[in-house]
Amino acid sequence: MKTIISRLLHTPSLRLLAVSAALVLGTALTFATAAAQDPSTPVAPAQNRVSTLPGPEAVAEHWTTGFPLTGAHERTRCESCHVRGEFKNTPKTCVGCHTASARISTVVITSSHVPTTQQCSVCHNTLSFASAQFDHSGIAPGTCATCHNGTNATGKPAGHLVTTASCDSCHNTFTWVTVRFDHVGVTPGSCATCHNGARATAQPGSHIPTNLACDTCHSTRAWNPAPMNHTGIANGCSNCHASGLSFAGVAPVAPPGAHIPFGTATCESCHSAASFASFAGTQMNHAPVAGVPCATCHETGRSFTGVTIVTRPTPAQDPSHPTSGDCGSCHTSTTSFRTGVATQPANHIPTSQPCTLCHTTPGTYAGGTMNHAGISSGCAACHSSGLSFAGVVPVTPPATHIPTSQPCELCHAAGKFNNFAGGTMSHAGIASGCASCHAVGKSFFGVTVVTPPGAHVPVGTAACESCHAVANFTGFGGTQMNHAPVAGVP
Picture: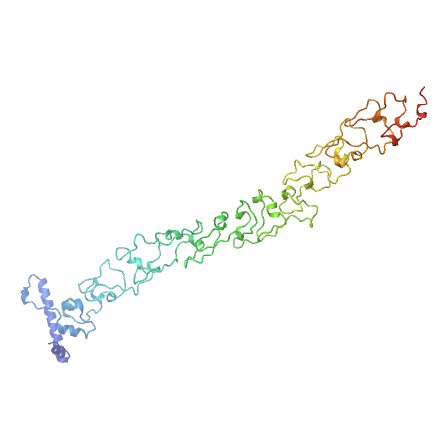
């Protein structure tokens, strides 16, 4: 049957006849429609009405018009499109019929339809409007939310990353899940809004301790490598740079084993923010290590990483320099050992000996034990009556000392410096004034003086040395009598 119809339609005269019949039929249907709308027009019984659904012939014919009848169009009444039986200028596009302003009354785009300028056939087929395969081709970039707002189409879920960027900044049109996140437009410093461990990867437990924003060091391409940025860090260096610390993806610079001792001082006491990339060339600051003994660093033979340090001179370099004791005992300057050197007080015992000869306790000059080693003269410079010196009360001649202007060491030997008792009397240089010591009734501290015996020859006012010679000072016996001095004695 179909073969016969196909041949008839390919015969020009028969095809013209068929078209004419269709027009007549359409006209008749038009009048029938009008009559149905006019209550005064009689209506034929339903069983006598002519069906206007397109038959196989019409379907085949439509293939030659550029508008093939497929899907729902095969079941659509001819007069739905060919109004009043007119075939000319019948729309061939979807929007020609499926819009509110079309001349044909049919299903139209609803107000909730996805906004688009594409042809209906891009997504819909002729079987049903419901089974639409959406094609995003031609959708203007950045307009996703026009549809994907939770009403027209699926919108962002409640747990979505906080962003005002368009969906297509990260998502593609194939699936939501395959996301390529684009950080363009993300507000600087807001990384933790998403990177909190719930919505996106957060800092690992072993991350360097910081309260700075992620993008201070990290880029949007990858977490590593992340160049360390010390901007805004002015203290707390040891939180990261103390010996033995390590963090995720970071090997922080720690003090070398030969670092100069710094006690409890902080890194930033010497190292400045400008030197964070390299610790070399740091200016030494002694203020934070004031409680650390100087010799901890400046003792002979000491050396440290990155530091050229001045140490205690060796005896070969300076024979006069003390070989023990803390530097701070004498040196008060932390910038030069040549300046700020503590000197002896103005009332120090006069001496040219090294300080350490007497001062043996590092850091203090008080209570030095007097050491007379090497002193063989000049005793009176310290031991004369009435003298006193810083921290020292020297032994001075007692008030009952034998009167003399001779130097102490004439009688008192070095072996007696700790005890002046038992000095051997020396009359050297004494040629007169014997009675000053040897007159009757004289006595002196620590000395038993020989005085004239009671049965001594009367001498009147004559001096001892008138008869007694210097050679006889240790023994007065055998003196040659000299009458000249006692010429006035009866």
